[in-house]
Length: 298
Image (tube, rainbow, N blue to C red; front, side, top):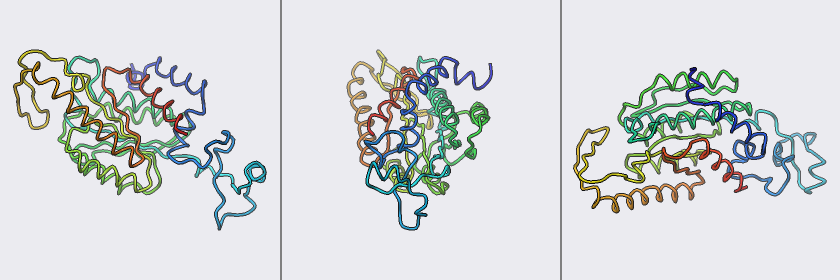
């Protein structure tokens, strides 16, 4: 089995292809609509235009669009219509956890990343890869050629989530690396102090980048399916804690919900897409639902 087949199974490729055939506007909305589209309410034929600004060549004005809108728009060049994407993967030790699911959080993230990489390459949009734990560990420059999917999955297949975490510091490093407007797709369990992470996410967003935060937790981390006296180990410090699961569950689930709600609220206020997931959800279905919900906001 090839690396691509391991993480991008044929049924997932078929599902994404059907999505593309059934509703190409969903993919367009995902990759090109972004957060603020001046063409909201217009048909898809206007998706390759932007408003005329002083300094543009008047010869580039599309007079057919002017006739319909009474506004000056010019045809975008290819460099303006393509968007560069970065898949940003958390390599911290906690991402290697699974309680009873087939996929660890890291495997689940790779499956999501493979589907998104396939989608972007299919749309001829360049996509690259950045991995981090305490700092940036690897970076694969964006490419739009079909071989890029194999390149990205080949690199990911060699990596193991074994490091300690400095999520906020790594996001700040990434923000400093990116020179052009990009779509940053971040995959992490976010198991660290939220305050600096949220500040770093705001900084990345305010740098002019579109950000999608895929918050991936294990099914057990969300639903706490434990009974009796259970011993837990913190994956990075190896600290151990014994708890009575029955008496602990309600408080734990409430705290996890607060944790996710804070990210949801902070991301919404900054124009960041927040996608909470757990490993019991079929990743292809979760991704399709997300794409459709994103398109519905335009």
